[in-house]
Length: 254
Image 1 (cartoon, rainbow, N blue to C red):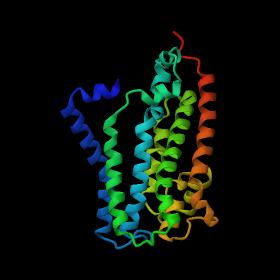
Image 2: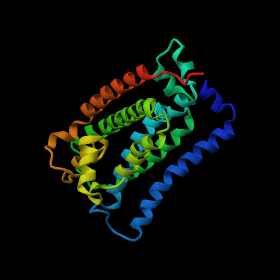
Image 3: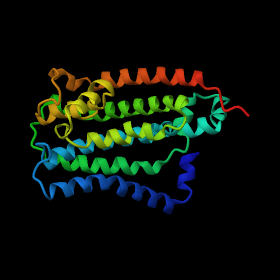
Image 4: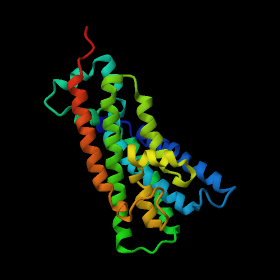
């Protein structure tokens, strides 16, 4: 229904998709401006930073396209319109994911894919079988991890109600963090996004293996191939949090 609604005015849809493409691309423009003054950022050259940027942007874009509305569940909890979803014969999470589905968000995925394509043509990497295997694994697993974070943030809003900005700190803030090398951040920050909210498994850890860089924290080499396991674990925990939040929902009264 929302796709048909978005395509009803084709010119408007195209303009919105282009605007989404341009707005998301401003983050990379900022990176290009930095590299107009420096040759390396935290020891990483422009192609390597573009590689991190592209992986993060594509993974987050796919997650936002699939389940982005869960990140903004607080509005439905506050005004009681979540009740409408509860009486329909369909899973609530699926309805939340489809709510106000915006195909224009594909602009972010396209923009990230173009940057990633540029990076792949410029980075100096010996493409062995394990490195080639990691490319689709990183994108799919990264999208799964971001989806889990969005679902968990939605579950948190059952209790906090007006916490969309807190959720954005881990979603939009997380993807922005991952677009830069881990070497520019404090060690405590890197440990936090590795062991607490495991966003580092979206690109930092597997990309370190692909680029031949030392891991940002002392971990064995095999963790570069752990993103699928991390995505499954995060999804399971997010699912438990979602069910707990849904059971605690008591509507807004009258």
